[in-house]
Length: 340
Image (cartoon, rainbow, N blue to C red; front, side, top):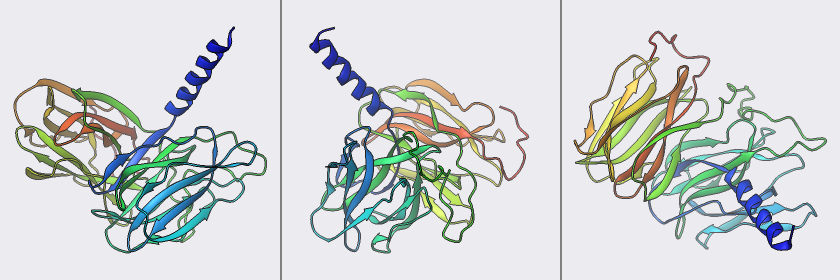
């Protein structure tokens, strides 16, 4: 086998490794320019460099290679602010991020597999968010939008590398600050279907661990312009998923009842997502939001699972949409009495 073939195999192997990274979230607004995870693959995160003031300004991940040499990922965000470094300990990795966000990312705090939490970097405005990697995965970078500051943030995670001797066991999610062990993380998210033509900025959201879908916010005219999930945690606190698409149109909210959850979407799509309707576990359906063009689509999650977010792409319209689902939570508020 010649060197050219070996080089091609090496490049393909690197691309396969990169494909194993999944992205989740994000929290924040629609300003700035999008950035994506494009850092080195297969390296251990050793620290996160944070620039902040009254809001989050910039993030940069620091890695260690097999020889212990430091490598730095892409720095995303602005330049002005206080600088801090959150350094991971031996055997520790980042399991999630928490903070507040509105039009910008107001603050961020890093949570590790040991339950340790970083200081909160930034201000105290905005609404609370929590984004955690799926069970058995570690955060290796970030996605979002940025300009002079961090407009939006999400996570990039991959299956955890083989545990090294002396590492603490992998936890589904670190214990809360009160010391109570939360409900185990649910099975890995899965994506079903895509209606529409594509284009625009890709998105995939969300699985807010320990939270349930409370409502879906839809913006529409002749087409679907935007969809946004609203969640409630176990304390009844509202957590907003990211708004994707345009907010200039008719606004409607579809609220779920106690014990009810989403099981699918139906509608029509062509060059854009022309319309969308939400289907629930009780057999109830939302109104049809949007127009009458396009070809029909129908995406229903498998039995014993629930829809927790959407996957697709958007710009001024919703260009493509599918569902993100997971295994149904074991402590559902009432038994599933309606089969699909």
